[in-house]
Amino acid sequence: MKLGKSAKWLLIGVVLVMVLFVGVGITGYVWLNRYLAGEEFRTKVSQGVSDALGVKGQFEPFRWQGLSVYTPGFTATGPAASSVDRLSLREIHADIGFSAALHGKLEIPMLEIGQVLLSLKEVPASVPSAAVPDAPLAAAAPTPAAASKTADASSGQVRLGTIKVATLNMTWPKELGGGGSLSDLQVILKSGDNQTNTNWNVDAKGGTLGIALLPQLKVTEFTLRINSGRLYITRSEFRNGSNGVKGAVTASGEVGLGDYPDLDLQFNVAAFPLTPLLPEDWKPKLVGDLDSAFRLTRAATPNAPWKIEGKASLAGASLQGLPAQTYIAMGTQDARYKNLKFQTVSLDFTLTPARREARNIIIESQGCIRVEDGQIGDDVLGPPTDALSGTLKLGVPPGNLSLIPGARTQVFTEERGDYVWTVVQIGGTVSDVKEDLTPRLTGAAFNSVQETVQKNAGTVIDGAQKVLNNLFK
Image (cartoon, rainbow, N blue to C red):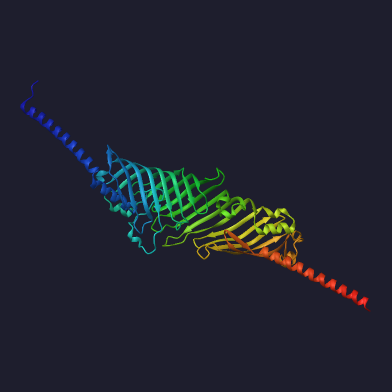
């Protein structure tokens, strides 16, 4: 069949259009790849991410393969009024979805980051918060919780789906809850609302946690929720990293992610060995397993101090090596005083950057000693920085004092219950505790012996005088 003249021209036209379409497509594809890999696009993306995180940062060059992109990293620093000190993301892979491009959106259903290095800092009170873009920082990963104000203003808003972080390392200063770190944590973040990127569910595992008061802990479970600028700890468990599986810590509560992060966290410590928590001089003296419940708080105001308040008790506790123990053991001829085994050890405590206090101290080794109404504290900031001061009521069975001259009549003068009591003054420093019981017992013994000698000497002199008087009548 022969084609007519008009049909031939129509066929030629279709072929030319197809060729032109393919040519335009190839040209557009090449142009698009060059644009996406170019400096202009990288600068725009860097600015958008920086604005969302409230930092100033830059991506390294992009490498595209289809709808996947890779960059060696993103490095940023926080301005003076930002909680971020430094942020580094390494080995970033992202899958891109362009279905929302017509609406000015960019979809990233999967974002994988090899390593996150994040260090936080205390925001100086003199720096106005307006210097930071209105976007809170996500504590567990770099991208969640961009402020809705920033997102709405951005025509190129990014919709995020799932973020996987192979390794997270994070540090924060002592001004924020006493300081601490997270190391080698594996994190998965799933968006709860990818329209605004302000609602995230976070699951983390592995790695270690270091916080004030406790040694390094292994992270066994750590589940968080980030919602509109606040971080909520929903489930968490940490195990003692230095002593196998013995000793566990659980935590819950919430943290504000603004310029001046507020804290309200509750911790529970179960069967945690006491020795790693003690100053070096005390480690060979006091042993036991710690149980504690305490709360860490901090107000969302410039230079607000953190505060830890709670209760603690010891199980299987024993004490040895104090001078008073040796003196009492010698005086009473009771070796139990050299290594006291306690059935009860409990106290309330408060810790702040300026002061540490222990209150309502109750300690008992049945048949040997009981402590009540103990109040001990030290001013961390005063000279010397660990100077102790406090008092406690000390009770011992009256029969145990029978061999210590003057102890019962001059030192332990109050009778109550099964014990006789005295008030002991505590001083010195944390590493060199001083108490006034030993010198008081020594002084009482000396006075008692001296009185006995003087009394006996008077009796001898009186007897001799009578004998002489009888001889010379």
